[in-house]
Image (tube, rainbow, N blue to C red):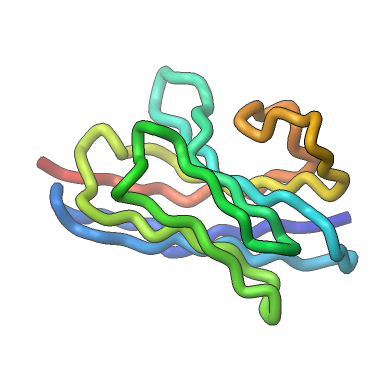
Length: 127
């Protein structure tokens, strides 16, 4: 089992920045894809970004491209989402997720691809 715990959410004004973190604990893993998703009230969970654990290859959705960056620190088993130029429409609960058996055939923008999820951290952007 792997546990994922998010932190770093909060309230920020539009145009500001915030960094959320996701720490993994539990069984060791050497290969994985880690992702960030967000869910606003009344909406479905939406893909934001993902990163390959081994090589650090990353991909972000078009809605946040140029503003958000995903990264990881393997030494402390943590991934980050740096969010800049925040907008009110970025307000959501941000969840991290892990797929510990990745392969090139999987669609990592889909929630069903991931095996483990964190509880989420609230990000609120005021106008």
